[in-house]
Length: 291
Image 1 (spheres, helix red, strand yellow):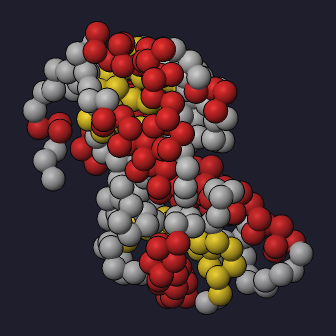
Image 2 (cartoon, rainbow, N blue to C red; image 1 turned 135 degrees about the vertical axis):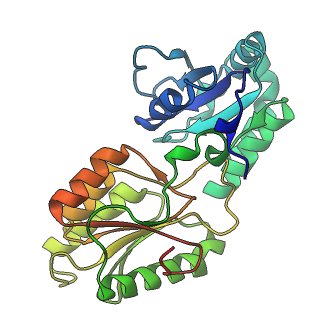
């Protein structure tokens, strides 16, 4: 993989921003080496920080997006941030250029999460945009290999990590989710349509209801990209908020995949892990194997 930081790129990178701090974190990282403009999805994206060019766009303004990108001489697009809910069709009936795309848009938003992602990317590519991956545009956001804080997982944690990774590999074909909670050799919860945060919070309720009895500090959140997942969008993300929820649920730490998982708010996350005695570990592509 070539490092985009090795040579200056003069054409701007456009970031389509969903919810959360991550799109703005990426924009700040890119800005010293390449012009960047953020198109923030109205009703989803956070407010823009100072110093970053940004424009708010509704779901029905694909035509406006295209014109603004052409005016800035960029066709490179990076998708980052969470989409909290799918828009209803009334929100995509916007400008005339978007209206002409409605049949394609309707087809794009039918199916499971991975199918939708592939369809939406294809829709933008058909309009002449080039979809770039985090690994190419902002590689410093991705987790490096190894134990990322002061604390390492125990042998029991490693066994749970291997079970969780094997489970996610086995179920990838069903396009269910990217994460699983495992404790003492038992799968406690699996991510579905509710997302990772809600799955972890469910474990807090399960513990309170005594549906599992693992001691505090046992168990792990395992999160990784599905095999065959398009890494230009929907890259797995963990951050300080994720770790806080994992600790609130009484689990010992987080295992992710090196080079294929974004660490949001990295410093805050690892400081929390060090302070609480939790682990964050990035593994290679082999189920459960430390990188």
